Amino acid sequence: MNPFSSSDPQVIFALATGAGRAAIAIMRASGPGSASVLQSLCGSLPEPRRASLRSLRHQGEVMDHAVVLWLPGPKSYTGEDGFELHLHAGPAVIACVADALTDLGARPAEPGEFTKRAVQKGRLDLLQAEAIADLVDSETESQRKQALQQADGALSRLYDGWAQRLRLVLAHQEALIDFPDEDLPPEVEHTLLAEMLALHNEMSAHLQDNRGELMRQGLTVVIAGSPNVGKSSLLNVLSGYDAAIVTHRAGTTRDAIAVDWVLDGVRLRLIDTAGLRETEDEIEAEGIRRALFHVKQADVILHLIGPDEAADALSSDEIAVRAKIDIAPAPPNMLGISTQTGEGLSELRAFLTQRVSAMTANAGAPPLTRARHRAGIQEAVTHLDLARGATWPELRGEELRLSMQALGRLTGRVDVESLLDAIFGQFCIGK
Ligand SMILES: Nc1nc2c(c(=O)[nH]1)N(C=O)[C@@H](CNc1ccc(C(=O)N[C@@H](CCC(=O)O)C(=O)O)cc1)CN2
Ligand SMILES: Nc1nc2c(ncn2[C@@H]2O[C@H](COP(=O)(O)OP(=O)(O)OP(=O)(O)O)[C@@H](O)[C@H]2O)c(=O)[nH]1
Ligand SMILES: [Mg+2]
Image (cartoon, rainbow, N blue to C red):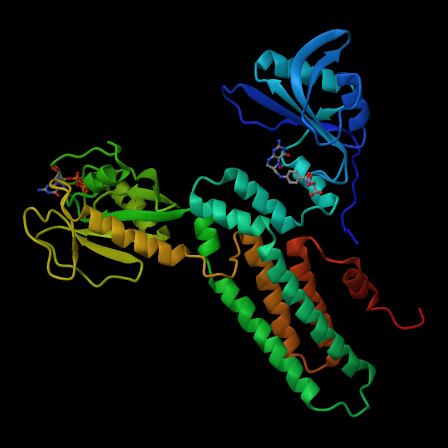
């Protein structure tokens, strides 16, 4: 059963194509009254799902000659009756048609409302709907692939699979509750515990994996190090434009400077920071405070080390790079660059590409992509662990239900059955 209910039957419309100069603008509409609205504009209903050229008329006036699609439900994106008008993209054409649609009783759609209706009609689950939003926003190849995988239901299948296994554990658990005095083989209890442990391990591994969130949001790479080692020069050469001021003076950079950078299909935010040192200068000190903030938030730190500096012990998210190797060469087995001669830059790019793809590579199992997913899985694991620790069978059953529900809320498929169970499970028999 679909847990959502359609509440607003009004026809909604919106421009489906992006703003800016283009030849064609697609106005799309959806809702039960679509047939009569379209009929009014076209004179008659075109053949379903076939592109037809029509003159669009309103109040006796021709508004545009447009390619029109009549898209009757339930075989449509939203599952409702709908249509598309492929208009000439002039703002006056769009405004005129929008006015006519409003006149005919339709209203402008709210953001995401077409997809919301698709969810309400059970055409998409919540994870797929989120993935459609990610697909629309995708800027890099890795974001596109990840969003498409989730839109195709890969994450939904993973969560549904876990929920199904929990349901099976629950069914066995209930057998134990219903027949407490019968001699159920002791393996039943062992099998239940083993399956719950397996589920715990799979969900925990899924929570450990932050690649999906990194890929969706992009990784932050921070360039840090002592003053004057060439951090801003590196930002400029990597990003390919003159984003940061470079001078011979130590302490030039104060504000953190961020540029977007796509490396091997992965979206990166490259941040140049103030050189780290003790200083009396108030403004520089604030710059250093900001630099340390960015270092703390970084996914990867490019630690630039000057020709006369010692390389300290590095943390695992730091990549040590010897700077200005045109002055003094890098020690063996250390990355070195010169922004002056360009030496070592392609090696640095290759090393960074490798590091980034190791952090984001999709190893088959679909990763979670949002904080909402993390919170839901965390909740499912918490209740699963309470179920594993429970000695009282009724309590274990209850925790298993709560764990299943947390998973169900992620897809939006908290089925009525388990909700009813949770609510009425607390009633006494006979009431
Ligand atoms: N012009 C246009 N392009 C578009 C869309 C659209 O709505 N209009 N899309 C929308 O976001 C995306 C494509 N996604 C879609 C997904 C499902 C259906 C749909 O109507 N499915 C029906 C019928 C399938 C069929 O005709 O074989 C179904 O699954 O039952 C349409 C578009 C991207 N391109
Ligand atoms: N020889 C040589 N000089 C370089 C190299 N990279 C940068 N420089 C010079 O070093 C000086 C400092 O460069 P910046 O890029 O401003 O250094 P920074 O680390 O950003 O300095 P702060 O912002 O002050 O912390 C400038 O005079 C650059 O021209 C290099 O690879 N070789
Ligand atoms: Mg600088």
